[in-house]
Amino acid sequence: MAMRDVVAGVAMAVAIGLAPGAGAAELKVQPADSVETVLAAQKGKRASLRLRSGQEITGTVAQVTGKLVQVSAVAGREFFDAVVPLEAIEAVLVRTRD
Image (cartoon, rainbow, N blue to C red):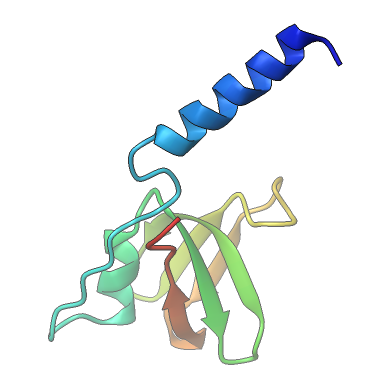
């Protein structure tokens, strides 16, 4: 392995490690919140949805309506979006720490 490759790899690792809030989001829940409002606050961020069926869908929250959530860049199916009824969601998981 060339020294140039080692230096480039270390520089990339340091840049990723020093990026503020990289991959982490803050989660604040208010007394009046619902699944819809929690998801709306995560718009544009990655989240996992645990469904009542037991299935888990992870991706970027693209859009939230009164009845549905659109998840883009679904993990493991990056060329697909998913539309999930809010009533099918049992839990919303958000990465808060690195």
